[in-house]
Length: 562
Figure (tube, rainbow, N blue to C red):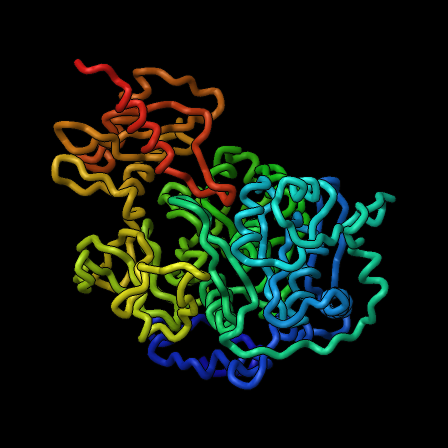
C-alpha cells in the first residue's frame, strides 16, 4: 500500500499481499487532515483537489439539461452555503437535512454543511411527511434544504425546522414567507469560508436505517469513516483516474451518499448524477453519452436492464470496465448475463448503513471470484461467522456475519443515536445476516436471519432459490419466503414477476418448481408459486420479504378450520 499520495500503482496487487501489508497509517496518509489534530470533510472531498479545469460533477436531468462543475466552483459555492449557515447560527455539530433530488444544489448543500463543521442528514425524496417527521425528530435538524415539490410535505411535519428552498434559476417562483431562497442567500455570501476543523470522532453525517424490520434508527457517522470509504472506492470499486464513474444509487440513502458523492470526490474523481426516473433506456443512454466505464448500483436496477433485453444492451457492450453491485445479493444469472451481453465484470459487494461496505469482490485486487459469493473482507475489517452463543464457526457452517471490533480498525459504528444497540456485544457487531465462511476465506450469503427458511429440518436460504428461479427465461424478479406449515414447519413459497408477454399458468408454475428442483435440490424447491406484478420494496429498492411473510400469516389466521 505504498506509493504517492494520490498515485496509482500499475497492475493489480494480490488481495493476500495487500492484506498482509495493510497499515492504517498508509491510508490515513492519503488524507489532507489529521483525525487527531484536525480534519474537515469538505477539504478532503473538494478543496484539496482544486486545480484548473478539474471536473468534480457531471450532471444531467430527464429533460436533457446538462451541467459540469469543477472542484473550484464547488469550493466557492460550498463556502457561500457555509456562510449562509453561519448567518443562521448553525455551526459545528448542528444537523442540516437535505430533501433534494439529484441536483448540483444537493452536492453544494452537502459540502457546505461539512465546510461549516455541521452534520449532513439525507432525506429520500420519495418519503412522505411521516417518514420525514420521524427522521427529523431523531436528528434534531436545525435546517432543511428542499425544493418546491418537496416543500409541501413539510406542512404535515410537526415542529419542522426552518427551510431553505432551491428554486430553479430558469423559473421565476417565489418562496413562501419565512423560507430562505437558496440561490439568493448564497449570492449574498462571500466565496471564501475557512473550513471548521473537527476530529475523527466528530460526526459529519446522520444516516437512518431503511426500516425494513421496524422504525428507522439514526446512524451517526464520524469523520474517521472516510478511511473506510477511501479503501472501498480504491480497492473494491477500483476507481481509476481514467474512469468515468456513475453510481446509480440515490444520495438519499447510504450507498448513494457514501459512494456516489463522498467516495469519488474523496479520491478527487468526478462523479455523475442523473436527476430522472430509472429506466433501462435512460441508463444505457447515459452510459453511452457520458462514456461511463465504472458503474455502481443495486441488483434491482441490473435486473431491469436484463429485462430490457439483449438488443438494448448492444449499444454499450464492452464499454464498462467494472460494475459493482450492492444492496442485495447478486444472483449468478445476473453475473452471467452481464458477461455475455455487456462484456462487463459485475462484482457483488456487501455492507450496511451502519458499516459502509465491508465484504467485497475487489475489482482492484487480484483474488478468486466465486459466483454467488459476496467476496472477501475489505482491508481494515475482520469478519467472523458466529453461532447463537457468540462462538466463531468453522467453514461451511451457517451462522451470523459479525465484525470483530478489536481487529477492525476501520469499523466506525459504535451504536445508534440515543438508542440501545444489542447487536454490539462481546466484542462483535452482529449484522443480522446469515452467511457461510468458505475454506478460502470468502463469505457466501445465505439470507437475513429472519428470512432463512426452516423446512422439514433443513435450513434453506432464500437467495439460493431466488438465484435458481431467476435463471429461468420467464422470470424477471422473485422473492422467496417460508410459509408456515403444520407438517414441515415451513414450506418454500415463491412470488414471481414474469417478463412482459409471458402469461402466468399452473403449467408454468410447475415448470418453475421442476426447474429449481433440478438446478438446486429436491428439498429446496418452491412448493407454492404466486405470480405477482410487483414485489414490496423499500424506497432504496430492497425486497421486503417480511411483508410477504406477514401477509401469508394473516391469510392463514383467517382460514376457517377444516
